[in-house]
Image (cartoon, rainbow, N blue to C red; front, top):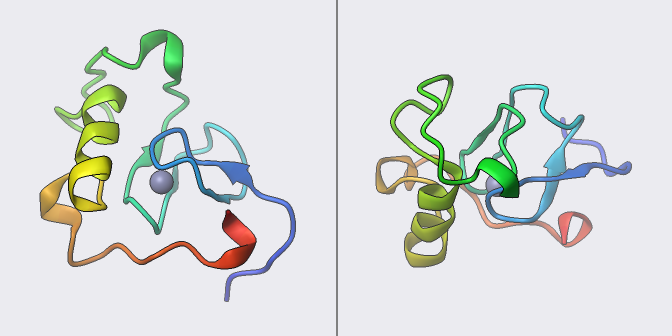
Length: 84
Ligand SMILES: [Zn+2]
């Protein structure tokens, strides 16, 4: 069950979906896994939890298809009011 207390903003989609920053939380809105990557190194491909996906690329995907990668489209959901 998802609580509505203060959450942290997902670096990919920008909605407040994460319980802690850089804690490997999986964002339910875009399916980005927050490994701490941020603006400064957004173009780096870390080859960690997000595989070949850089944050910059994931953001482009989210803008285009509503998920960090097109293969995650079946899993994502729309943000709820408390996450905006
Ligand atoms: Zn997200």
